[in-house]
Every structure is written in C-alpha cells, then in structure tokens.
Length: 362
Image (cartoon, rainbow, N blue to C red; front, side):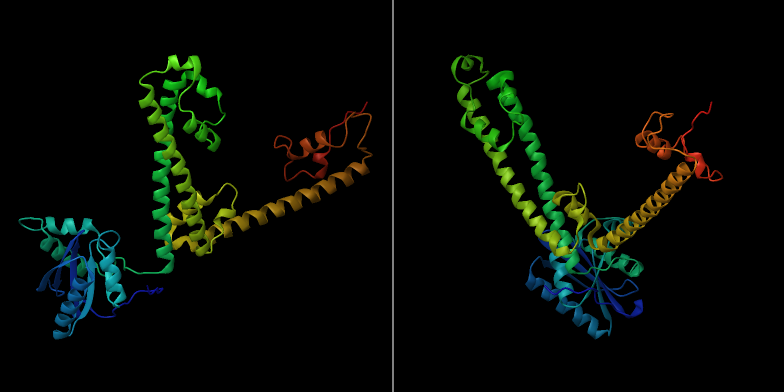
C-alpha cells in the first residue's frame, strides 16, 4: 500500500466537476454520476470486487473526459463495507469524500415522495457532495491512520475477551460452589491464577465424604467446570498474544505512552486508538503542560529552599538552637510542620520572622 501524507485535490470550481455519489453495501454498490446542477449522467451497479471497481473508474473517467470535467467521489461509508472501494479509488489517485448517512437521509426526505433504494441513496449522496464538498472530510491513507485502525481493532478484540473472561469467572464461581460448597474459597487466594486453574482442571470435583454434598449430576458438573477452565486458560494465552501485538504497534507509532506511571499496554493502546492521527499533537500538548508544571514545581522548591535558609539565618540571629531546652523539641518535624502547613502560612506582607516558632518569654 502506498502511504501519503495528503490526498489528491482538485482546484476546480464546482461547475467543472463530475460528482459520483455511491451507496455502499456488503456485496453490491450503487453509483450515480451527476453534474453540479444535479443532471444524471450515468448510473451503475457493481459488486464489491476489484474488476467492478476498475469498470466504475473507467466509466467515470470516460464520461468526465467527454465533458472535460474533473472527477470526485462521495462514499456514504468509507470505513466498513466501503473501505475496500475507498482504498482502490485512492490508489488510482482519485479524490474521495466521506458523506455522512445523516446528510443522505435528510436529502432523501426533502423529496415529494421519499422512497428508499440504492439508486436514490447514491443520487442523494451525490447531491450532498455537490452542496458540501468544501466541508466533507477527505479520505486519506497514512501510516498513522493504518496503525490507529489496527490498534483499535486489537483493543476491541481484547475488550471482548476480557468481558468473556469475566462472564466465565462468574459462571465458574457458581459451578465450584455447587461442587465444593464454600470450601473452594479456602483453596487459593486467587481462584483464577494459573496454579488455581490447573488445579480445578485436574480436580473439578471433591473426593471423599465431600462427594455427597455435590449438587446435580457429578459427570455433567465435572464436564461443565472443565470446559469453562479450558476456555479461561485459552483466553489467558490469547490476551498475552494480543498484548504482544499491541506493544509492537505502539513501538511503531514512536510514542512512549507506556512509560507513564500506571499506563500499561492496554490503556496506552486504547488512548492511541481514540486520538488516531492527532495523537502526536495531543501528546505534544500534554508534554508541554507537564514540562510547564515541573518547571513551576522547581521554582516553588527553589523558593521554599531559599525561605528555609532565611529562617535558619534569622533563627541563629535570635539565638534559636535546634535543641533548645526552652522549646523542648528538636529542629525537625515540629518546625517543618509550622513552615509548610497552610494554617500557619505567612502573608506576603510579613517577613521571614513570621515563620519563627513562637516562644514565650518570662
């Protein structure tokens, strides 16, 4: 795949463009080509394969060359069923715009007799493309976008496995209680650790006198527990594989988000998948804010250090000793508490003497 930072653009007025609106589906697509004045020039139905994509491009370029018009496509969907078509059009250096289905539905309702079929939806997409060509998002293919899509797909896959794992754990709790009663809770601190899962797989049912307390048919209960435990072990391995793949994709983005405290591979991947291609700007702003905060803290520490030195000098001038028998306390924690507590913080009009410990003179 050829990656580029920008998509092809056409610096032409609308009157010099051929607008091709498309209604995309899983197996078939519908395309309608119109002029800027809404005149239909061609209508074509095609399947979701490369041969029909080439046929659409050939037909569109033929009509556009006969009228000396530029060519622009508007797809109602360019992320799911229309992704293959959008990539093929972009690879042929054609301008592709993404048309929101809300605009298409609104345009269809403006008709006197609003009907719904593939041809009318494609024509409505073409009319929206004519009206909003300057504001509709342009479909592009960049390495950042592709990485963000892959990260998001893996993140959704991981979330699905985690939810399935939670449901299985609840079910296993219920099954183990039927087999072992409350004694199963005393076996392991974490019932679903690797050691615990292997134990339940090898010993799903109790032995000895506890066999009489089993609720239900022992063989069926045994098979149920084994199936759930095997699936939990498989999910553990799948989650490890997904995290390795996510770590590889995060490294390809060049971001160091996993170095933040409390941010692992799963959370970092979720953040990168949400911010998509804007993550570089996002993290640049965050880094700038963090650096600004750290610099402010450094200034505050410097000011506090200078004020501590001033207090020590003032204390020495007034004859204060760290082990003064009058105060009967050291120069450590009580003095620091008086220095940094908000209740005893001095005002700006007070000098450093306001931070001195209060002593009574007889």
